[in-house]
Image 1 (spheres, rainbow, N blue to C red):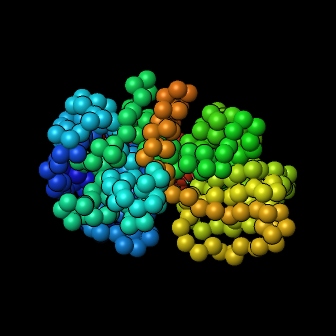
Image 2: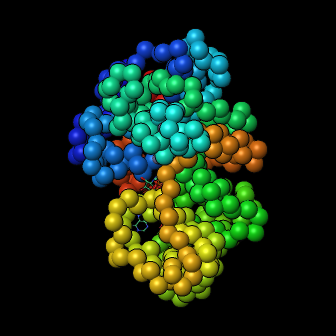
Image 3: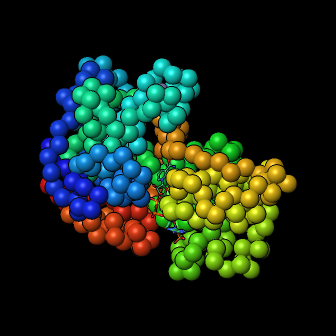
Length: 346
Ligand code: NAP
Ligand code: ZN
Ligand code: ZN
């Protein structure tokens, strides 16, 4: 089938042909309508984390229509609108999988792209493609009242910020801060507000202040302004850090309450400068990390969004414009998620 991918870390994405497995008894075949553009797609294509398999076909914020179901499929029918996020398989038997924590599968989950297909042992290819074949366990129901294009980013940006909000028990009256107003950041604001928290955005960009308030933020702190940073010392129960590149997190630890947690979801790698343990020790504060969320938790998030009418703020693009979209994403010039309209390409 046709797909869009990159042949190497410095090559632009272009049209190519990929092969997927023939649907198995528990598989669902999905005609892809929309696919969100996550910063992880760009990290993978450019080999920022090492280990990229080429050609790389990214895309893990997928919404589409079911076109075929295997004989053992019970949850879906042809014609259903469904979603697929960052995982397409896991062992289903380990302690993590048994607890609906497939993202922590002890045998490693199968990523939607840049992983190994469990049946063919060939690389997995993501949603920048015409269709995808996925075991029904990893397929999500999309609430019918929501715009399917604007739902796509919930499958990664949504669940990645929902999971820490739930794990750290954010509720009415919690004080939550979000660092970085991009794809993950704007969903974190909407979801934390939906749960009843008061929400502060930390941003480098003065130009995003008005948008942040429109998205639901109660307060915006410009992180490069020392006086503003000082004004929120000891304030937050939970801070979700979505910044993709290395940065100093020490000032944000200072903004946590006693017992507060800063959870890293953006940057992967060694911290620089190093973390000062004093504020953590003296305030029982934690610095943690989190990756996406389990399948049951993803469905919970989608159902919550259906109930509260929460979707992503998107800019629809054509498949052919993906390389320009990547350059704009690197400049934080996106409000607040690009979504590829697959119909534009057929
Ligand atoms: P994005 O849309 O590009 O947003 C990132 C935001 O971070 C920017 O809008 C900007 O906000 C801020 N920022 C960018 N560069 C910065 C820098 N050098 N220093 C400080 N702030 C900076 O990216 P995204 O799609 O939300 O993804 C964010 C990160 O999360 C990526 O690294 C991605 O790979 C990762 N991710 C992780 C998971 C997981 O499961 N843990 C899942 C999905 C994505 P301001 O302009 O407001 O400062
Ligand atoms: Zn992602
Ligand atoms: Zn497992």
